Image 1 (tube, rainbow, N blue to C red):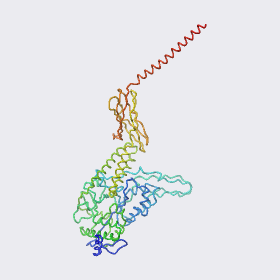
Image 2: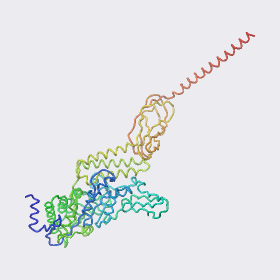
Image 3: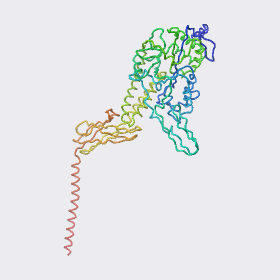
Image 4: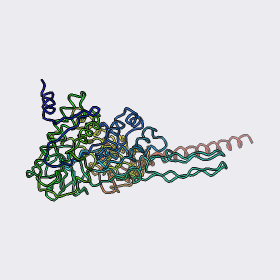
Length: 565
């Protein structure tokens, strides 16, 4: 008999598993006092590296059998708190009238849920991976204006027949639709702002939820300083006094402790594929609840449990597990808000550092983002660049990537390549070798801009030797989107010869832009003076010769006329 079957059999034998309720089992927890249990579950999507979730993906996720629909089916209006990825909300809203009907219906259904709700980090980004890689703050989104398409929020004009206004995504009120059959002027509604897109009536805020058992002591001060009032940590990540409850104080940071002995069998039960396995997992969870309840001091024990990031992506027996706990007379399901009320016991962090290789890759992503921010300073609208890239970074560090250890490095490599391509989109055009055939003239330096917005750069030319003198070391140049422009660098020839020059670009604050370019210039100082003299002499000779020939011809003609006379 397997260990799981033996556990189930023993649970039945001692009365821990009661009559079945559907696929669930009623569990009797033998505890001397009632145990309050609060549960939080994440509402997320599978790992991907896009800044926003595409319409096609949203349609798939919110279809009747899609992952978001199944997650909501399992959790809605049940006594569990929902940690919602704001990226889902924004991705549906920003599509405006083009949002899939299944997605808008899903969002409306979520808005009507009675559950406690709180926001996860955007894209459920991995908080401790960033802090352990050197980020001085928890990374957040930086706005969505760059992705708002006015055409998706425009009101249709009426032409004698009423044109109903699009209902719009939840949380963004559309303008009133015309009700008269008379022609009316087109109505242009106000576009949603970034705040409109992300706004949601969360019942709980200020909660940070790192990936389970990934924190070290230095993470908490950064999380707290970033504005979070509470951090969810696994009990495996903490050292606490016996009898401590669900709240802990770790160096001044408030922690809501997820009881691992309960969370683990809960997550396993949700993934169960057979009734026997499910019963065994619920029995294990029941025993853990009983043991933890007895261990806690006070008149009433409070336990907090969480599901990992992929539990609901892989399984869908949450409602059965909740039903099993609800039928237990010694267990009371309470809200997460209730679990957040009470005294905190002192605790310390048991460091669970992230793998060195993963931290090293994250550090490269942070360095690339810092370089992108400096590069974006040359653009007419820097936030159109930095906001999009920040969202890409957050999606690339989603907690669900932890379950794809081979795919994540590949996605990181692609992200770093995209960063390099972005920072190479403004470059000195190929200069090559050319001649400088004047004592004093401007050097034309062409610069290419492959961005979809104008940029302003400063062009610098530095000769290797004194054969060529450059008058202005930084010449400002405005380049329109997807075009090329030339800077005129004042230069003066000092002596003849070939001189190498270095051409570079920089921002207004001196940040290098693009790659440095090299060229060779063949300087011919003062060549034009002798050439002009030679040309003038030729002109004079030709002109003078013509005059002399004319004079001689006239004299000869006069002599001939005299002889004839």
